Length: 515
Ligand code: C2E
Ligand code: MG
Ligand code: MG
Image (cartoon, rainbow, N blue to C red):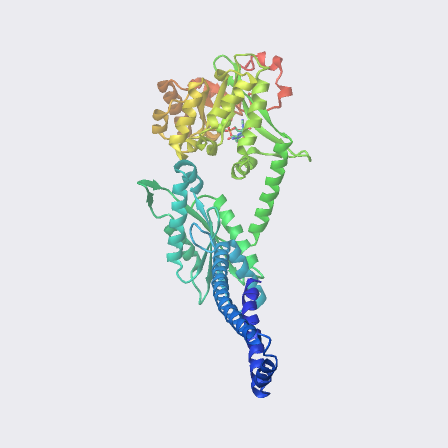
């Protein structure tokens, strides 16, 4: 539109000049000026010559005004065109990294579809940064921006003749024209290693990784847009499987992703309707033979009556950002239930590793305890080693807040992670829970038996209570009691059950009447 308006004044001027030229030629051809002279002479008593002069002067002034106006209009038109160009650039580029954005990518896809460039082959790489959120949260947005700019520069240097896009957040796409038979997996590996190269900003080292998925046009889709969706899908699968992974697209990934999207939707609805509730499994003092508390274990029973295990939905809740809401809901419910138990019983509650990098976690937990009215000393939080290793500084701050308020901390699943002695000496845990995989095999596996013995001795030396998980057999229980294990948990001693099944009668009973 503005371009059409810009030519109109010029056209008008040209039209006026043409009319003027035509009149001039006609007056020349038919001697109109002689007729005009005669007319003036015949009517010399009227000041027609003055009127004509005035007309000429005003015509001249009009001409000067028009020239100036045309100049103004041209510079206005120029300014508008420039602004239009800037707006176009901003609309199609990311202003931080100066890379083209999703809109640009969409326009390329649309053009490719119209032009039907079927003969050309492309590889699409979808890239998502690993650890970017942590940089932003812990080091601030300045660091985050610097990371994004550096990644953009590194990718542009790796693909100097290809399109590199930033699609928003920490997602990038490379659209690469394929000639010959390039080794795309090797190229994707180079993306990972280029992004993972050490990087410091303001003297702080930034630890970054990348998950990369790639797909091919025309092999993996009918058009470019579909191939980009497929490379995104491969990237999500890579991301879910860990850091710094590369995955080529395979069609079965779509089913996996669709299932995951469905599960996430169902989980969101289940949390909204508070359908996920804690079940309680007894923790038994193996010397006194009595229940000393319960571990809350999340249970999700769907409308069809099927139980979805926590090992399936807790990771989805973590990835979908639902874990805070779910934990708050479960903890509030478990604390309320625990109020109905005798006051010496503790509530043990699991925390996800990801939660320990949230500085506000301690405050949220203490607020819930305060609101429900459950004293902090009746609560024990179970964390895994990986949770502490992932972000040791924040984990320590969060745990210190809780410990200072009187909450106890248990190290869960000991033996399956790093089992690092430095962890044990660096942090003062109140309890260590031996993973059930040791208990399952220690009777037949001499080495496992020695490991359990060593952990129990370590607990005694450090003054830390030891719990054995997964006790299913009488003989396992007997052996653990003989070894001096403090607390036991397992199907033999009691399965996880809903609150209605945790009766005062059951709690009061000494459940180990054996031998
Ligand atoms: P965990 O904290 O180690 O919990 C013990 C798991 O062992 C539970 O599985 C429990 O049902 C199971 N178990 C207990 N005794 C026996 C036994 O004798 N034999 C066998 N085979 N299994 C036994 P569950 O409930 O499926 O939970 C699995 C994991 O999910 C838990 O491991 C915990 O890490 C996580 N989880 C459960 N509830 C929550 C929650 O509310 N929040 C978070 N963040 N994680 C949770
Ligand atoms: Mg646990
Ligand atoms: Mg455990």
